[in-house]
Amino acid sequence: MNKKIFSFRQFFLISCLTFAFMYAIIDVETTGGSFTSERLTEIAVYLHDGNKIVDEFSTLINPEQPIPYMITRITGISNEMVADAPRFCEIARRIVEMTEGAVFVAHNASFDYNFVRHEFKRLGYTYKRPTLCTVKLSRKLLPGHNSYSLGKLCHSLGIQIENRHRAAGDALATTKLFEMLINIDRYGIEQQSAFSIPEMLREVPEETGVYYIHDEDGRVVYIGKSINMFERLLQHYRNNDTQKAIKLRDHMTAVSYECTGSELVALLLESDEIKKHKPLFNRQQRRSVFSFGLFSYIDENGYRNLHIGHSLNGEQAITAFTTREHARKYLYAVVEKFELCQKLCGLYHTSGSCFHYGVRQCRGACIGLETVENYNRRADAAIKMSGFIHPDFYILDKGRDKDEVSVVKIAGGRYCGFGFTGVEEFSPSMLEACIKPYSDN
Image 1 (cartoon, helix red, strand yellow):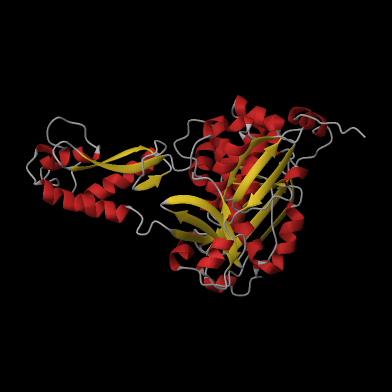
Image 2 (spheres, helix red, strand yellow; image 1 turned 180 degrees about the vertical axis):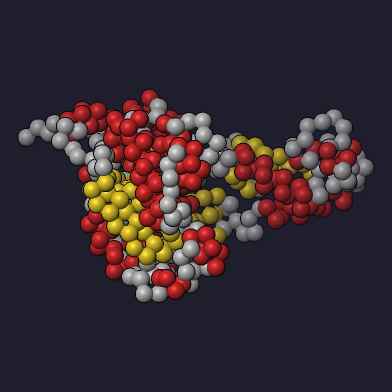
């Protein structure tokens, strides 16, 4: 039996003939700004079919933790007001049912969506919806405004907000803004919304790891890493900003992934996999993870010099960095901490004294005023602080679940591989046994 393969454009055009777009326009109020530690105090949902509101729901929520005084001053929601309100677990089913099959729309959508998603996560439920941000849409379709905050943007557009900083009032104002935006570019918004969670992405977890995009022949055409693989793959699927993004999307017929838990392990695995597979769309990423290093040498006057260079030249680096910018920031901090000379650290190119000497932060090694012995003593201390205390060690980080940790092995100052083991106890033999060898990045 032959399977018919459609390109993204063909799939979109065929599907749009029968697809009805629904939008859940949502606003939440919270006990604070961090979705990992704060809770919802109010939620409002307006279900919209692209032409009109077809359903609505709003309620205060008992956050099961105190509302800070400053938050009450902003929202007007007090501890007394939510004392008898339902807990999130009591309204969760209503939210799921109302937003099923709809696009999650909000002003600064990542804020509202992450709060709602984490409330569900506390209940052991994975909540996934495609999202649209009216801030981003407004910047694109309504350019030239001084501010795109909900209050100021609505004021400049003549949209009245009743009960500002309350969920129902802000959600209704966002609905009016959304109606204005969809009247400007209905096709663009529907294209961005359409089939935002295709079948091939439905099982991808919102976890840290490495993902693989395959073409219709099963070949890996792109490898990436993310702290949220589902969200990143969804971005690839919806991205039409550049010709390269469109080509990658058109090649995208299947995906696979490997959870790592650890961002470091994801970075290391991605680098190794790109070098191994050499995917079509990863041409600019075929490089080592730690491309830059901090090196030292003695100049003709006997002074210890530090400099940043590529770590692929075979010379043993004192320490390594993923980018030159990270290396320079680190070296600037070292220069300040140990009162080293900018010129002798390659940060200030001059034939005379460095800038720090002029402001009395350098002791004059750049022009021979400080003795070699005194200067090198501080430079050696900086190297000792910057280098590995021991050439052989293991780095323990997050695992793929709460019952394990990831282990990265360093031997002789070089990366040797990684693995995963349980959290109950650690011993050198146990750590060594879990390591899968990889080439030095």
